[in-house]
Image (tube, rainbow, N blue to C red; front, side, top):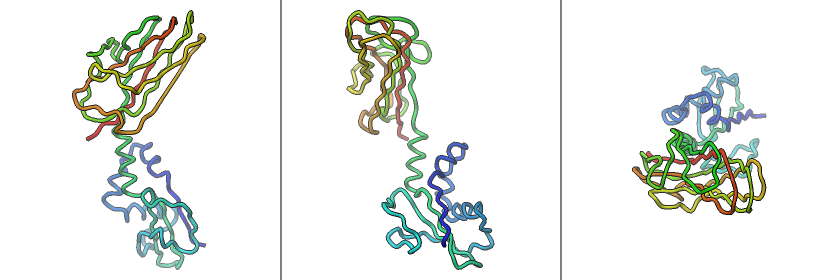
Length: 232
């Protein structure tokens, strides 16, 4: 039976070890595939050829359904002393490069507030400076906001309401926000994500965070993260 080495986790493995593997795929796919099969017992001297397999014309012994050929690539490695070839499945070059680029360009903006408060206010930046509609993080590249998370503690509830964590961009509110219903005391959280290029910004834009209190509540220790994706 023909061997099939499945290495779908290759991008995760390489990134976790700090290796930028996109250059390997760009410059020599053949060398990359050879390295894979050599790690699995096929010597370089015994490799006759490496060719890409057409997913529309797979060998009879290989049954893989619902293959998305924009995400995966398959290579056939013929051996000199064995008529049965080895097959390697890996993330396709285009998909791999896009994944690496998306991960490399993600950044986190940290906001928060240490202590109690019962009125609406702007959160502090990671440097401890309280923001405002004009003061916040200045974007150095264009990009988009892709996620928002909030953790806070409710200390007292006199009148139930909501706490809204609102993003400001250039002194204007952005529709994307966290909303936490406050009916009792305790630690509360909320998080949301949005697709890339939905909420965009340009270089020079100022991003800050505002906590809007609705009802009569006392909260403390707000921890907030904005995830952004920048463009090169």
